[in-house]
Length: 203
Length: 187
Image (cartoon, rainbow over all chains, first blue to last red; front, side):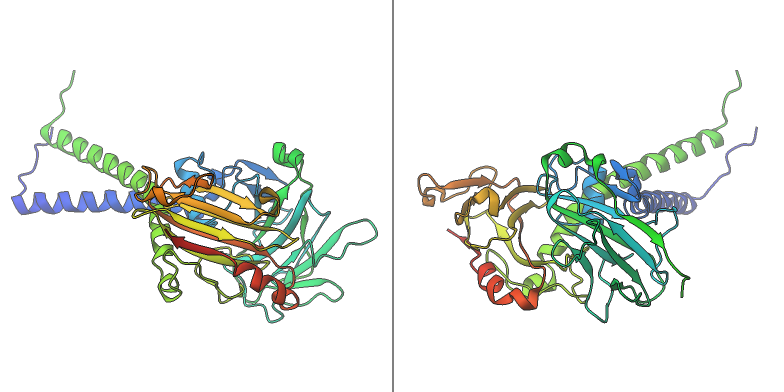
């Protein structure tokens, strides 16, 4: 068996500092990864492409949920007041990219008021030249079947409500339901999720 | 049974120390993150510039330039206040008198939403809340009998008033005066 090498005092101090440095880096890095890059770990429900955490804003939130919400959706409210669903992929499972075009269609959710907003992957709004950042219960125009439609992407799709997403980066869609109806609060999986389909080619 | 050498034992303890430290740092970081984020929010340059310590402030409508809080809603007009109940109760009042959705939400220093009232819950009556500290604020005698008292889980926190606006330019003559009825004043 190999004997322990005789390290000088300064060498031992250096090894100790290096080890603690590594430990701190691993601890901080893993916390960042879990909270920022793996928010699905905190999700409690998925409906279609949409994921939600029903403990957002709640005092019952666990350590990880509270931290992830603070980092990704600070100042959220509890689900009696507002329910939040976030989509970072389309219905085919592909990550949403701002240089691609998408059609988002659905029926108005069972809530007093609703909105779907498009954000860049830093969770802030795109610099939309037409100042259109969302579709909501006021601006949505329903077709004969009671469905809404909007598009996102770098180029306008004629005849649709267009939310510009300039650049080439990741993006997310956030569905907010204000004062959701009691049956939807009780069974969030009963949400009719808006569909997100890629249309055309990525510019 | 084969005994471990001193060298092997040394590295075993070093690995154990590294793993334990990493786990503790990880948990501490996750615990501290919402508290640090709230501190940054409450002491941000915008908070100082708008002088919102125990005072209502009225940021402009959300645009792509709004980068203080993640996921700002472009469909809401926000009003804010950083409250501090350590030296006494803080009185919060608002009378938006709007037919559309509005709410006043209170957040503790760990980011928990511990209280919310909206137009439906208020029953079209003005909001009039006395916010006190967890241990009971000094000067609580200032609170009138029958007043609505809310206990804040932390000495400091954040108030966020949301007023729905589907079309700000068309509605601003109504909603701007409505949101400016918000007050947030120490007793």
